[in-house]
Image (cartoon, rainbow, N blue to C red; front, side, top):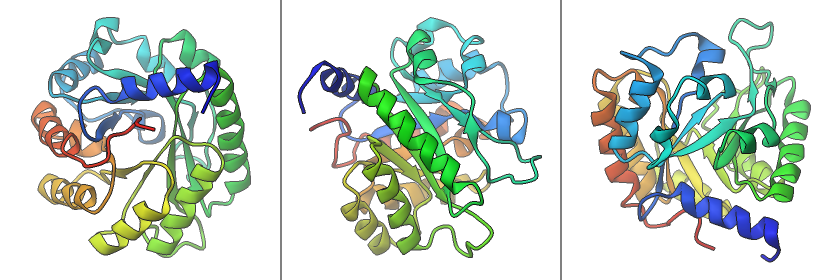
Length: 262
């Protein structure tokens, strides 16, 4: 790759990976969709614990950025989330733009993220937004994380390996630098999915619940080829978010495929 935009994109990707090995991202964009995040203390205090635990980056909406101190990002990167939807909507799988790449740059973000529900009733608009965002990211040299899920009225199993592999390729083909998804439990299927995807794959943490099971699943995904972890609920709903984040950081930073190396 050549050109100023490409150099800036590669530089920001390297900054995302604050530690050797894979990447640990903690998405904290859930409040718009599901209501208040269930964690103790303030958002700023939570970010302080995550940064101290070795988290590489957090995902926030633009309003949430105003409630945290800039120094939280001395040792951790900011990814600004650009679309949203609520669980109260007639179609809870719908996502629509709520921020721009320009806003992300003004806020000092290192990267942006977009959520796409492949198979949803509004898949066309969501994919179009992903593609348009990728074009702006290319123009301004900003890395793009695509959160790709297989969800919709005709989807029986959102972690079906063939469907997940297809969803990831949609993101890669349209210009994403990183993809996050819910991977199957079968390590062989994960290995095939990650091998078929031309950009690094981050394993999603899944819903809140059994933290030990989630950590085991994420460790298995890393060993099978995932390049990192993007886990939110399993971290911020824990009694000690910093401790859980530290365990996940240790797993992610031992991953074999460093993110941002090209």
